[in-house]
Length: 258
Image (cartoon, rainbow, N blue to C red; front, side, top):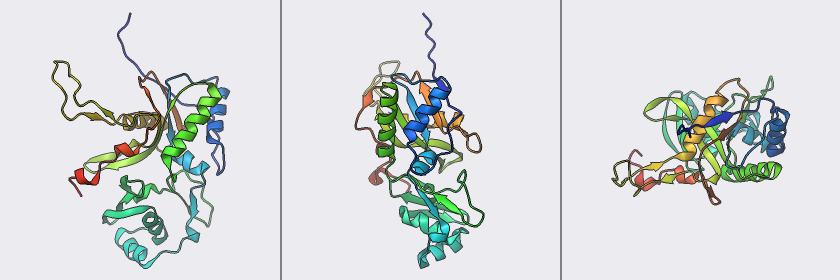
């Protein structure tokens, strides 16, 4: 018997443009069936934040935003539209760092990220009306809804990871990270487990959901690929019903850099 370990990743190509109010799990199930694909027990679906936010109507017209004095002042320092800065402030707990063209905040969900995850790429824009897309109100709840809907559609138990693209403080480039999780542990604690030579691990915790999110991002791409759902098959995991992405956020008392 072969000892080779492998993961298989595949992505349906026929998912339609998602609109506010759409049943996202139904759209994904239909796309899989159109392409003669199915889901199996143990599959993990990585779903792009943007289609989740779109289905939940997290779109804001900048024309409807009235910037405060604070937003106007900060916008001048970071060279951004004051209306966009106001949205960022509204979605944030605090401003962590800023300089020209860069605004890093702690999002209300706890993630430290640029621009509170607010984006206008791959969002249909009207000629005279810029539209911004916000993160889901509760990405873990969104992931649970997708897990339940797809599980019912195919009669299987799957894990769901909602991913977004984040930069990192000491490395160039963005990577996919998990902002919502359902069914699968976001963090695997290996402290106390033996290594190859029997030495017990002292501090190893694996950001499993982030690793799955990054793997899915390789197929999703970052521009015009239009593959916002990736199925990962062959990853070994055990269901965790109370799973959330919040466990990936380092508690402030252990944050040595703020």
